[in-house]
Length: 149
Image (cartoon, rainbow, N blue to C red):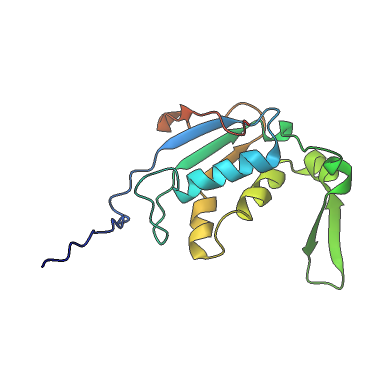
């Protein structure tokens, strides 16, 4: 009696062909958009997803200054960080939007990625731009709608 074993496919880094996607973040909710971008960066949208290999695609996000939060998060949500000195620095989401709007989406996506060395490589595949212009026309990115209900 023969035992049939199914083979699990494991992607190899040389086999992965990364694709380029472009997303317009105008009037998109930060959490919904970030979770879908994180899935693309990890490669979970592909059938050949392998956890220990970077199988994700590149994502270009334009108009990051036009993302929205639900509720009163622009005034109530705070970002804190440690500077090396005593105490922590903090700022509201509204202040961060005025100062460096791309950090809002970058932090949201970073916290949704795995906590390992591969996450740094995945996060570097996300390109954030204020405004609708980007320098990646040569990669011929395809438009994708993310952040919808």
